[in-house]
Image (cartoon, rainbow, N blue to C red; front, side, top):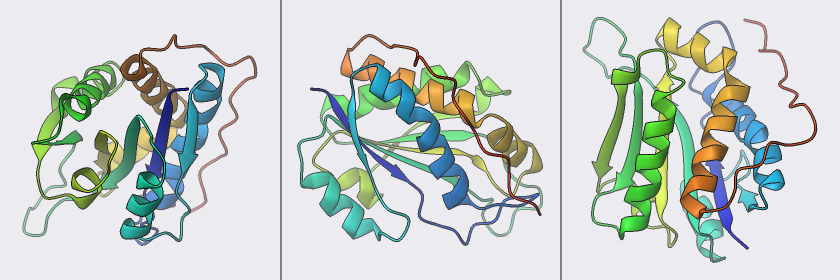
Length: 193
């Protein structure tokens, strides 16, 4: 059966404008993906918020997953006056075709829902260990800049749409029919500031 290891951020110290943090919102997105994955017959496992990156890689490598999907947000590098905006979809630059193909599908699909599609980037990378050391083809998606009000609020207000879009990409990569779940998806309210 096709399978994916889901690795939402464990970085609760990265605060979002208006409340909440990176770990919280990336886990909500994974929660929103799960009904679609189940309906589409895709098995999954996910990390725990307290896991370190080496533990996450070890868990992913303990089974033969068809895809490793890491979800994060990012912040503007020091020294820049204005916060950056956009999505980066990373794949291991020297990996087998699988990781690059999965990243490309995610990149294409996210352009359909992100308000500024030209700011969705497809990025090869050789440094990120979550891409480099996993056995499964791996993709790391930085879904926006949590220090940019527009990105922060876009993520918060589109949890269900982002989750559905990513689940659709996973199904396309795994070449299984994408099935809408029977039950309505519940997305909790954002935490207070």
